[in-house]
Structures are given as structure tokens and as C-alpha cells.
Length: 102
Length: 195
Image (cartoon, rainbow over all chains, first blue to last red; front, side, top):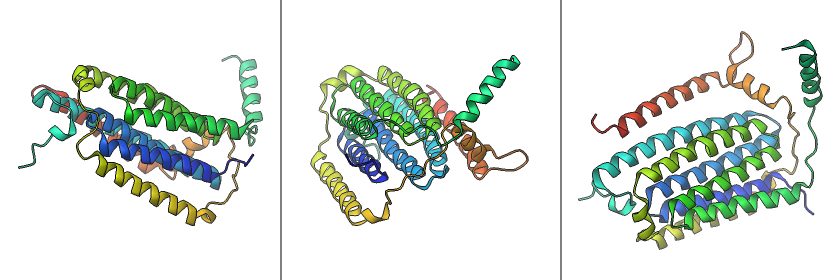
């Protein structure tokens, strides 16, 4: 069996990233769009940790922790906006959120 | 803490600071965990019910956390489970509860432009494949073992610095805490009924 190298991890991360992009571009429900963004951030994190292992340095892991912080901030603010919007317009579908379009 | 326990802890700590044990059956667990992660991701973008999507995302997050463990990153794995699976996903489930779930399970799942989105994503996939095929030589096969037992300590000394000296990422760490503060304020103001 082939030993597992950095390249294997990069392929898994790319697959997760593409799945997240498909979710962001095709789903209607904003909650699921936000979940797809979490998938994308996880793919990036996996890349960073794999590179950290490849170089034997911890910088990648520190970057991964910063990305987790970012993801938490993004989820909190994004879901806050979502609740405010749902209270006003009674919908959470992306194709019905078109206030700025005229 | 009694001295005997303290001595025992120091002994455990010093024996664990080496390169750590080689993981067993690495290929098997790698394929199992990455399969779980990708299957979870697929369910996230295809399920109709948002709660099912959230549960599938938790499967993905835990599988990725175990991949971090295989990459000698126990601290990041713990952060992943505590913050993501424990914190962010609970937030998601709360919001799913607050916004109407019955309507979401009756509506169409995909928006009108889904073929365009899918084509764009396929283009991105083709880009990744060509980059990885062409740049295969850029990623060496070596894996340098990182000491596992002292991982948390080393990450902490990069974030907080050693005694009397700033770490490499201390400033970025402070900025991150400011970001979290702003995000808390933003979330609270956004969800208030009247500002």
C-alpha cells in the first residue's frame, strides 16, 4: 500500500473545498450556505495542518487556529444577520433576498 | 497537588515529548476518515432538512479532527472538536430552530442558477486537478515528525511568547481577540429587536 503523503491530504482538502463551493453556489437556504462556508474553511485548515507536518514547523497549526477564530466570528455575525433578515422579510432563501436589486 | 503525583506527571510529560509513537495502520484510517469527511460534506450539500445537514457537517468536522490527530496536531484537533463541533454547530442548530424549518423542508433545495453554479465548481475542480497533476513534484513525500507531547506548549509559546519575550504571533493573537469582540457586539446588535 502506498504510504500516505502530504499530497493525499491535499486531494482530500480539494474535494472538501469543491463540495463547499457547490453548496455555496447552488443551495437556496442561507443556513446551508453558511455551513458550506464552514466546509471550505475546514478544507483550508486541513491543507495548513498538512503543510505544517510536511515542513516540521508549527506555523501552519497556528494559522489553523486563527482560521477557527475567523470561522467562529463569521458564523456569529452571519447567523445574526440571518435572524434579523428573517424577522423583517420572513424568508431565508437566497433568491428571495433581492432588496438591493431594482 | 501532592508531590508524588506531580513527579509522575513530569515523568509522563518527559517521556511523551519525543517524536511520539508512529500511528498504526495509517493508510486504512486515512482512507476511512477522508471517506467519512467527504461523505459528510456531500450530505451537507444535498439533504433537504437543515438539521440533517448540520448533523452531517458534525460528522465531517469530527473526521477532519481525527485527520489532524494523524498529522500530529492534537491541539488543533481539540480546538476543532470543542469550538466547531461544540460551539459553532450548536449556534447553527439554534438558528435552524429559530427560523422556520417546515418551510425549508417544503421548498426547492437548489436555486434557479444551479447548473451555472455546478459548472463553475466543476471548472474549479478541473483547475485543482491540473494544478495537482502539474505541480506534483512541488510537494515532497517527506513528513517531518513534530514532537507530539509538547505540541500544545509549543503552539502556546508561538502565540503568547516565552517569558519576557513576545511570540511570533502575539500581535496577530491580540488582533484576533479584537475581532472576536467586534463579532460578539455585531451579533448582539444584529439580533436585537429594536436598535
